[in-house]
Length: 222
Image 1 (cartoon, rainbow, N blue to C red):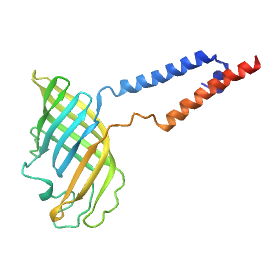
Image 2: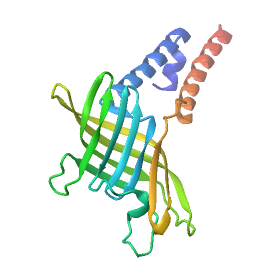
Image 3: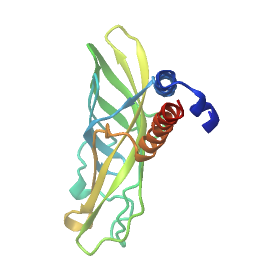
Image 4: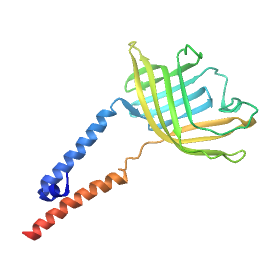
């Protein structure tokens, strides 16, 4: 739509068309992501590079589980990213997957999740987390940075039906040194903001200003 078309419209039709266009764009976006669940609360605690605890929440979804190859590990006696006894670099980029059982590494994942009234046993869980740039932390210190999360969750319900759900989310990642030089890492999920992006507001605002400006010019010319 160009400026000439906007000026030539009547105000009430202009508003209706802007509203329809907005609703159409929202509808397309919703349909495209209908199978993806956005995590709004919860956390992943990385106990070592192949061991984690999972507590996730979303609209209608509640996940509680654990994944890893050794239930005895916890973050105070497990290396993360760097060989034990070496120079410890703090890194909170992460990618992890496990199934029950994992045919290659023997890793397992345990726990359950509820989607509405349907309860599932966790069969597999995989995720990837990407953070911003991390600067080397001071000795004995730690860092925090925003992160983005994508993953998949597979489970079987009481009827024997297996389903896989795509997950997405964002939040704040924190990592710090624990006793003996080990590193503990946690990912805390946060609810996405409901406030429209500034660019979207500016675009809609400029369109409405054009509409009302055209109406005013027509009244003056009349």
